[in-house]
Length: 198
Ligand code: URA
Image 1 (cartoon, rainbow, N blue to C red):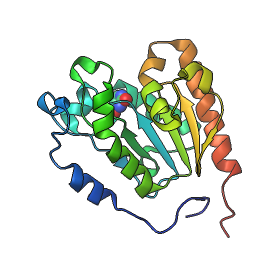
Image 2 (cartoon, rainbow, N blue to C red):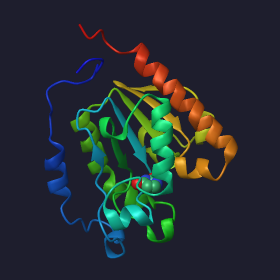
Image 3 (cartoon, rainbow, N blue to C red):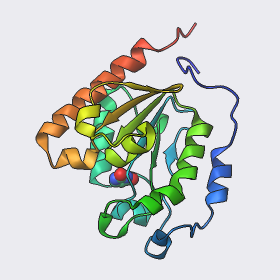
Image 4 (tube, rainbow, N blue to C red):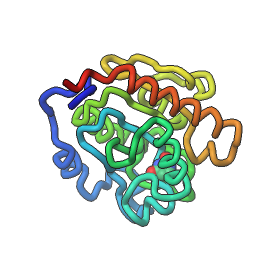
């Protein structure tokens, strides 16, 4: 894959990870969810986007970012020169918390192995964490997103770009400006790190 620095032989297939998840009952969210939202996109993606948890529309459809936040995400992806089909999109939690409340630590803990295996399968070059739960999960810090965004952080072999959650940005025009600046920066990064295609 041109410009894909991390990709080697795949250690685990996404469909195997999905099969292990099964009809998961590892936490209490199993009682209230409609559909599990595993994730979607290109399993060879250079860029993996991680959100928080399914919302109402995602819970009904079983697909991540299909509601208003997803529309916003589609728009800002284009600022980075990306289309949804060529990236991979997943969430920290695979099931919707009732009323979209914040994920609880025991839910994040129960779901963590599946996101970790998704990362190990895709081996993206860049991980974009959207919002605090995803950012804290990946960067292992409690520092808030406003202080972490606007630059890349190296985590092992991954370049991590924390940014605001597209749903939060919709409610805050100043954040929307910043998320757009971050996605422009992502586009610059991807162009700078692309390997020659010859
Ligand atoms: N918000 C998220 O964090 N994830 C989704 O899939 C949808 C909205």
